[in-house]
Length: 256
Ligand code: PGA
Image 1: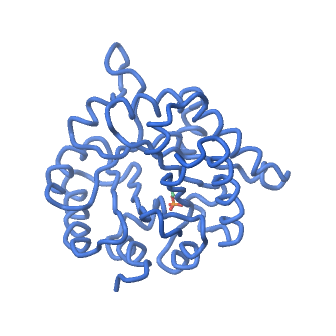
Image 2: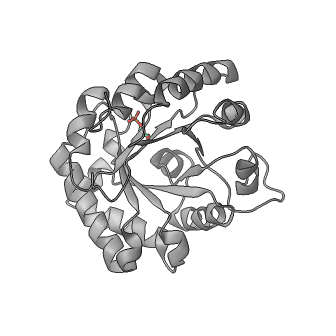
């Protein structure tokens, strides 16, 4: 955590919850988060619940996020959702390049780069996910892998867009497995990514937040957030239970 950047904690609800269940969870989060000022909170419900949850969050500091998008504004792309549609329901953030999209649905770096620009065009802040597999880590290739994913996403990127970006480092082997990276392991990668962003964008990179994701729970969040280059979290499983998510959000000096 670095004083220059307000930490962001984003809940990724993945393929969970009906509209009614989503509203219940969103309301609990909205009510609790009211007085929290030094951490930013976002939630990413499924597409079917975005509109209802967006309405419920009106007037609250909790921001709405989408879990994915297509890169075109419109067209014959059955089953896809476009950035202007996400803007229409009030999305502030858009998660792209999640490892589940990459691994299960064949998403490639080139598509992630297109989505990043498409979201930015509609004033939605991209949360770009990158992370190595266990095989890559065991082969000593973790830094090279995330470096390559980052480079592919931001190649030739406008400085104005770069300034607004959020990165999420999510080691694939830690997602949904209960196997969290140690704070030192996370910091090693975050420090590397910070250096890469600085080299690429200079002072424009100062505000770019690098979130950690992968089995973040109330009992490991505090130590992770103490790392100088961990600027918040992308939370999956623990974001589905209001109390767990809120305990993670409150792991921030000044909040009780
Ligand atoms: P997890 O998921 O917290 O359940 O590991 C994190 C993510 O996929 O963003």
